[in-house]
Amino acid sequence: MDRLLPTLIIALVILGVFALMLHGWASRRRRQSGVARPVPAPEELGAASLVVDGWYVATTVADEPLERIAVHGLGFRARATASVHPEGLVLTVRGQHPILIEPAALRGAGRATWAIDRVVERDGLVLIGWMLGASPVDSYLRIPEAADAAALVAALQALTPAPAPDPAEGIAS
Image (cartoon, rainbow, N blue to C red; front, side):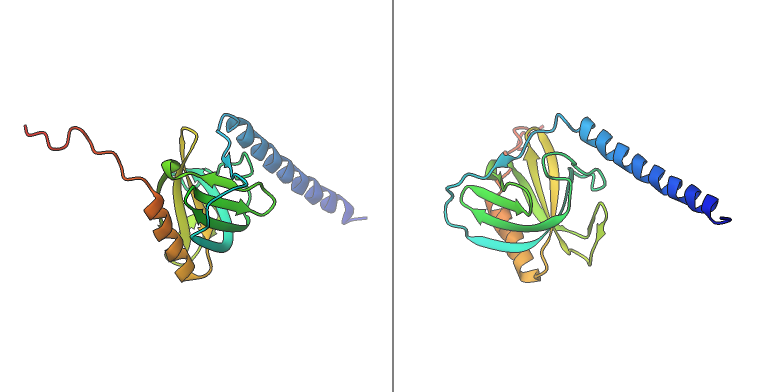
């Protein structure tokens, strides 16, 4: 009986913390309700030049690796397959519909060491910069095989359109 009251207090505190976490997640989803939906991958695609398996870690607002995108199936870490096709990158995250990141939407690809709640060895994540509608975002994949990760980055860099030349460049003053 003398342990009942402290146990109830601890249980109520734990329930309160979970309620606050749920409220925070729901608030984030509400704030991001205007974020565009990813393009669904079409049924018919050209042959894949590269297919790699790994983990989808997160999608964040570009250059803000702590600001997770929580809507449209992009909010949770899961097993994933990334395949590079002539039409773009198809990202298949377990439990979600495959999405297509078209070459015109790609902003670049590279390596990263951390994002949100995942810290790995130096350059242990593949960073994919892309446009989700009008919003620049970064997606992070954990590809266990270093050679596969390097091949994915190279394939995505080859798909990424070259930046438009700045018309002000080359003008002599």
